[in-house]
Length: 604
Image 1 (cartoon, rainbow, N blue to C red):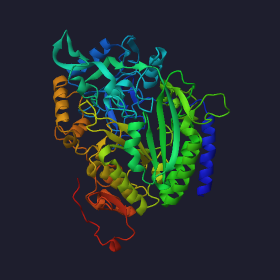
Image 2 (image 1 turned 120 degrees about the horizontal axis):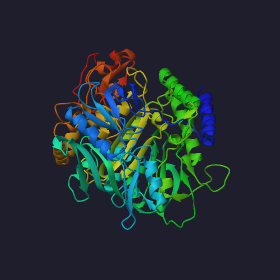
Image 3 (image 1 turned 30 degrees about the vertical axis):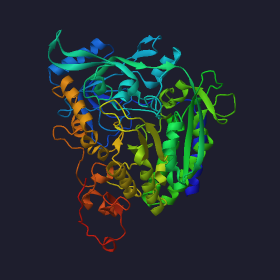
């Protein structure tokens, strides 16, 4: 059975490599009557709590004046607002307005998508907030300029990636967070009193304005990033990439030295396979020969029938408790990805996309990917693998940054769990294992407080919120270990609810400065919501949602068995390595376990 599934996957990958088209994602705002009576979702079709976000209306301003009018009109009515981007790829509920359900306004930045100006003498360019990363990179490249760093997924917009602190991987220069290269920004914010007839105003923030430190990573709670975001770019250069596979014995001791010697390096760790892929990624002169492109396999258009088949196989493995089958499937998948250069294309006239290392190409072609976004419509024969319009991928994503000073200890703890349960982490390897990128401490108030390794872990999520997954307890323990033992900070645009516990204590004085700026620009909290209030520790809101099965979705940390799934044999127990963790563990016999059904624990 497992061999058949692996063969199906391999044949699907072969087809995937030949595809050049696919259906672009559908709209994230759907309205029942024109632009009113709408629902808002994200690019995955589900928020962490699976709730439906209902709003009164959506507006699509195409100029700053239209944006000013939209914010003014809502402010006059004391209507809550949120900006929503074209593809809305944030997992948390950042795009849903506060206030009563169905009465808020979403302001789409989809038509604020242009390049505004360029200053070649200073290598600075100004863009509107709704421009996609791909369009931004192309516009800069046309001028011979390059954005020094960017996220790996090009389906984000400039305003969205800044608001969530998105980044690449590097400790060089100012580091890999895009917001560190913002030198100016315009916001449209509410005004409690009329300004030139509007209950809104335009705020210009220069590079020396201290409020820029709040605005450039803001979760969207200050107002709407407007027509002008000015970025410090640099002359175009090339990158040379080689993926190097080694065993994982002692690799955690090399992370710091690797990060400070490899300009754009990152690390993928496949713990159950004992393999590590170092991406040796360096900066080279523009004159270096090579016209390579990063067309990451998972970000290409994929045959929806193959993606649905792979998902059905994973669901069957989950249903039958076949962790060994997941291990076989993940090893075959990783082997295929490595053999195909992880999606790198040499473009040297060879018969295949990838013909060997190093792959060398312009920064604009190598730093980000997402060709499934730009493909021609084919009626969902092919699409991005997570497109919610078909039964494809559906997953949780835990993304937590851990200081370099303690990351080796964290990896050592994960290895202890891996060694105790050899099949427990195979499921993560279907989604690139433990993916590690590097960031410097940030000047932004909501930025990183230390030089850190951000570790992304993506894993199966059941479409039934009450159904636990295989080795539920192991991933919950790793999540809590990263957050509480190693004081990790979450990525603002990823993570389950529990990832945002104790943010107020972790950010300290920097959060106080951010909240002061928030109150300055939006004193009535019209751009705030229950979610952002909960994350920031404001107005008595909490990120935890208590209830039966809440721990399965990361809405809570279990404190009673009912927070898990006792009907499926999952009970709340202590962690194995990090004993302070409280996790949902499958137990064959409660009597043999020695703890009563109703045993409870104090949660974080």
